[in-house]
Image (cartoon, rainbow, N blue to C red; front, side, top):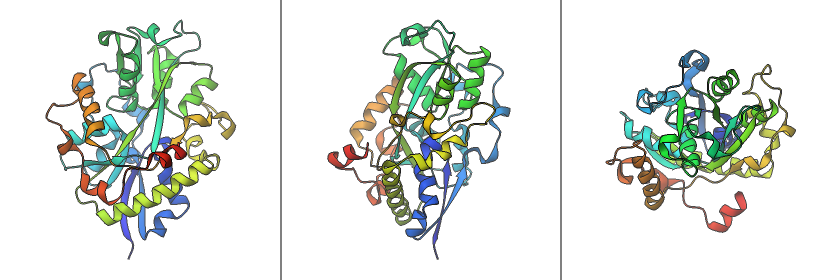
Length: 317
């Protein structure tokens, strides 16, 4: 009987290999019955938007839309690596980081087309809409601290990318951090990109996740990555369907394909973890006690996500 594994999928740009693996029957080829669980379990993000952006990250729960793993709704999920480290620290169920994710995503800080801001240094004391403890939050800090003093950087929690774009257009924030397909939407609606950065993410799993089942998922995702890198165009439908047509009608030709990068999942190393750890502790976003050994589950990484040789990794990018 096939192993059943429930896996959360969030925004399509982050979870695209899982959609592709499901569509192409790659999980089934591994003897797995994979159920893809939508992030938030059907919650309506429009109903969870604060009246005004929340600027204190301590007032926002780190789990956000991923709290289903704490309730046993699924065994695996992925998000930005900083957020995954923080959520692992906060986990009450012993969830651990198990590998780097396949999606190398990008976030862009965008301003309205009529904004006087043109370069990152113009964003001093400008309220930037983000989703706290998610990629938009951390990328905003990382991007802007090269141009501004830390006390000049103002991330404010709004919610998802659609909600951040709405706040921007309503004038309730001066800038918004967005990922695809919302970068393309923003540009299509006449807004300006101020800066942009690629960043990695991480997979998190529960302690009961079957190592052999995880290894099968890993093999299927690697095959999905190969398919995406051969041609992403057939799979852009998963991103396009996230955007309501009243906001923008997208087609495959609207996207700059250089923004999409998918690589094989791989194991974390203590050295790269320590760099992230020092940065997060420095911003007060992680406890000093959250060292590599308490956050990363090397048992599962050893079963599946082995480091990729440099020449193979370069060919995937």
